[in-house]
Amino acid sequence: MSNVALGAPFTAAESSTIRSDFAILSRTVRDEKPLVYLDSGATSHKPRQVLDAERAFYEERNSAVHRGAHQLAEEATDAFEGARETVARFIGAQPQEVVFTKNATEALNLVAYAFSNAAAAGAMDGVDPALAARFALGVGDEIVITEMEHHSNLVPWQELARRTGATLRWIGITDDGRLNLDDLQTVITARTKVVAFTHVSNVLGTINPVAAIVDRARAVGALTILDACQSVPHLAVDVAGLGVDFIAFSGHKMLGPMGIGVLWGRYELLAAMPPFLTGGSMIEIVTMAGTTYAAPPQRFEAGVPMAAQAVGMAAACDYLTALGMERVTAQEHELTEALLAGLSQRPWVRVIGPVDGRDRSGAVAFVVDGIHPHDVGQILDDAGVAVRVGHHCAWPLHRRMGITATTRASFAAYNTLAEVDVLLTALDRVPVIFGTVV
Amino acid sequence: MDLYQEIILEHSKRPLHAGLREPFDAEVHHVNPTCGDEVTLRVHVSGEGQSAVVADVSYDASGCSISTAATSVLAVEVIGHGVKEALASYLAMKSMLTSKGVDPGDEEQIGDGVAFAGVAKYPARVKCALLGWMAFTDALTQAGVDISATSTATPASATSDNDTTRNAITHNAMEDS
Image (cartoon, rainbow over the protein chains, first blue to last red):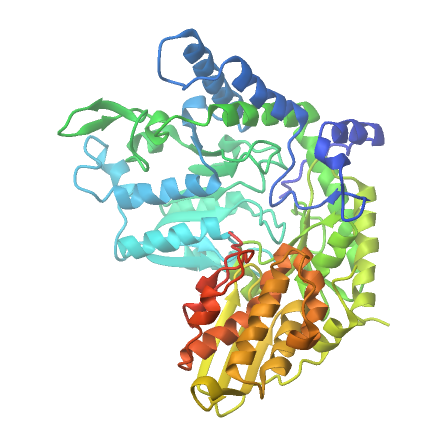
């Protein structure tokens, strides 16, 4: 299995052009040091093209979409729905299967709440009973996640289990940071109704074997939800090829704006699901006695939607498409290999996660012997290198690996080999300052 | 960089008064959810009212150099001192840490604590330096000491949450999503 499609990394000239699209990359930090931003796993920067698209929306066609009959309202609605088409195309989906949410966390909660809301009287009226049964969750049923989940694909399922009486189970992690597939048969069983897992670990960088998990989930009739926050920005993602039932991802990690995320779901499933947030826009007919709901995706988009952000996210899709996702993957793969090689030469550093580039994305977490990640991050910051320190919203994962926290470098299309060198050089100061290596 | 003063590195490598001891009047456990750092801290108070004295502070901490060193300095500064004086040290420490570099700290009042003045320039690390101190004031409350004068005297510039003194297990405000 190889999920990494290898094109060619960017040439120096191409990298330079890409970087010139990101104004923030030319700023300095901490006493005039050039910014080396290696925290794109937390949030990526946004190119001028994305910012221009948002600005143009506000300056030229700002209006509340799906409301009003004036020209601006029409243009704003066209821009919003056009953005939906672009995002859908980017992941190989149909536009009506793309729901805009506040972020990926909301997208995952939307699905989790569909299960508990389905239990309300009348919620599934008119839905094919076989389909409705897939959303029926109660005592004796099981929800399966993995031990490497980000809290956003963990806590909503814990809460769903608590609300419904279902049991939460999980697939474990091996010592080298991959899912323990030996668990598949025993953890995913006839009692499993939901399997939610991450495509790419935000800490370990592991690219998970989606097909193997989906095959098992399908065999037992469970619905599958894929957290694609760390894959969509870095790998070509095609929902049809993945075979899952839902995917969630955010705009801000893929060079797009903050405040927008996407839930993609198979249309027949979305059409069967009760709403999550209710109010304006998501209705069909409202009387004082009750309400019927709009068809998806509007059913899940209550309130005036984030049209400018949708337009910005579409611009980010266009930007990544123009770069070529295979080349983005290749660029980040080269940086990951270089960083892993550099770290392997430092015996006082231990990588948490796969130590080679196979089925691995560009999030590299590590610990430095005897030195807390906060202190590591501080020394790197002093050299202008921005990394993430802490548990990266994956506390159980860290506990499983026997550590409290890690330092994580993560890449995006705009990063360069020279930046990996700056990181490694700055890292060498850490044991010197703390006197752990003589 | 002026953050890692020699004195901080020294305290972090060899924290003073570390370890959990008997007797104690209250034990609290505080966590920094950003990084998972934690401290279990016990306080033993002798005497009452105005003459109450911090007889002992003992702790088991797992954290970064800043939080470990700050807890070590805390122990040095409060053990054997009056509760009133200890709370004044806490306020002086907090004021310095949350002053964004304006308050250089008073060595008379916080001793080695002045080495942490540089932390104030790094808002993300203020929580680390205050973890032990927050646990200490919480433990005093649990031990029945009235620290209300301290809470109301919180400097206006304070960015840390006073909620940390509310529960035995408390999370600092800086959330790591």
